[in-house]
Length: 341
Ligand SMILES: [Zn+2]
Ligand SMILES: [Zn+2]
Figure 1 (cartoon, protein in one colour):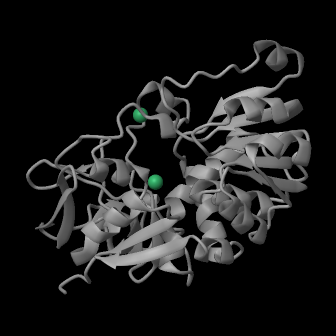
Figure 2 (figure 1 turned 60 degrees about the horizontal axis):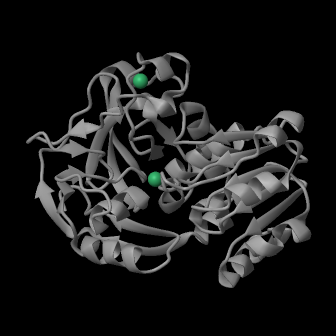
Figure 3 (figure 1 turned 180 degrees about the horizontal axis):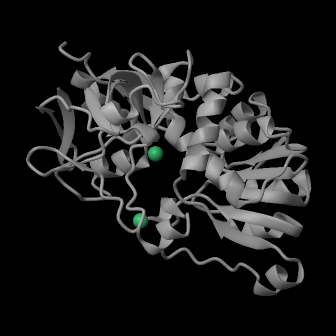
């Protein structure tokens, strides 16, 4: 089977690896599509130098083999099932894992290719993984299923913010992650949803996707007023988010930020008004369960369709990576060659 390996800044190669066999508790999935996320973009651009590595953590495909111990188990997948996959591994024994915060596992070690190269497994024709880490998506699109990981991350973010039906929600950043937050808040029963961005084009798209109001950062407070939960999905806007929080509200720091970003968060406001400022990082199994359910239901199908920017074959993987490093995109997908193909 084939796997894409990043070997240096702007350098990728397709390698041949032995086809995986399922362990007793595992299944093998033939990968149909894998999205390119910030992690892969940064590796390709050289913002993060970790070579060689086989990335790809937003993948979906079809189950082609099932291990003995999970074959026929109630709730487990069968050969032919279309699935979204949780490709991260968690140790289960470190401090964060023991507290159930598995997204924060100290040892997300990934997998290994035959020469020891760390592999996440998504940019490959096939992958063997634990049956508990695959989630069936019925007849839904495999591109929608390949957005299972970012969707689970955004569901985690909504949970971190204590989001409840009827809440007033504001989302700072109208990019891919902001749009997933918008879709989830809408189907989750938000009373109102505002999207804040510096790009008029993104604001227009967010309005068309169901945002009740949109605004530039300067006009956000005047336009949207106080909010129950504010999600920061851009690399700035923390102070704006805190200023928009109503009493008892919360601010979720979803995005990665520059480590040197100064932000005054108002300790006294947090005390007097019980404004919570919380982080959201990665996802946990409960987030996957709900994400897969949303994908399967079709409830956010139009939202996910709008996020598909382009699709590339393995032979064009460099073109796919050039596109995401040079142009604003939502999601660009890589399609591995069919097994034995
Ligand atoms: Zn991702
Ligand atoms: Zn752990």
